[in-house]
Amino acid sequence: MSGAEPETMTSKGFFVTGTDTGVGKTLVSAALTRALVTRGLRVAVMKPVASGSDLTPQGPRNSDALALMAASNVPAPYEVVNPYCFLPPISPHIAAREAHAVIDLGLLRSRFDALATASDCVIVEGAGGWLAPISDGATMADLAASLSLPVLLVVGLRLGCLNHALLTRESLITRGAAFAGWIANAVAPHFDRSAENLATLTARLGGPPLARLPFLDRGHGAPDVSAAADKLCA
Image 1: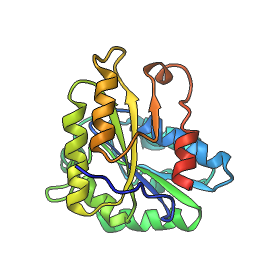
Image 2 (image 1 turned 30 degrees about the vertical axis):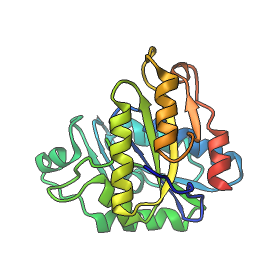
Image 3 (image 1 turned 90 degrees about the vertical axis):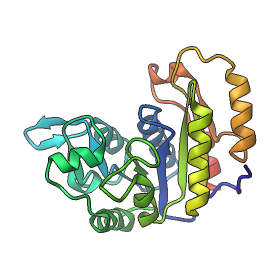
């Protein structure tokens, strides 16, 4: 499977997706936001759809969205950053159905446009994987397309990552999505044949990862993705 040259920041930001849920999308999105902020950019953030939230006096609040907001230097109301926030930690399309809500791509585009107008770029984090459903007919891939953003893929390094990563890349190609590159994140403390898996991913995703995050980074402060930020800003 061939790969194109990674997209750089000629758009108004990036859409961060992952090979699965729990692979470090928020970790990467927040770290990338901070890295871009240190480069003097106004960086807005968006978590369009979130499920798995806490009920607060201000309403439902999702920890991923709050982490992104803490990394951003462009203030925005929570409802703009995270327009659809559901309480149960289940697939967004099921959570929306149970809440009698319809996820409107047009509304999400309008919230994104408001953030883009106030910033140099917007880091948008998806929920679940690339084809996670958000309604009876739409997926996260459709959301990314509606925002016209290049896609940054977070690959969780664990057994099964090859299949998940290559299927995601194949879908990106089929849909004509711009590929910004990929980040390797060690989500398991021990992963047999890690080097061999990384070599396979490098060969089949079109190039090496923009960053490789070790497992301990997740428990010892923020990961360093400055090199990835440099490449994306080039």
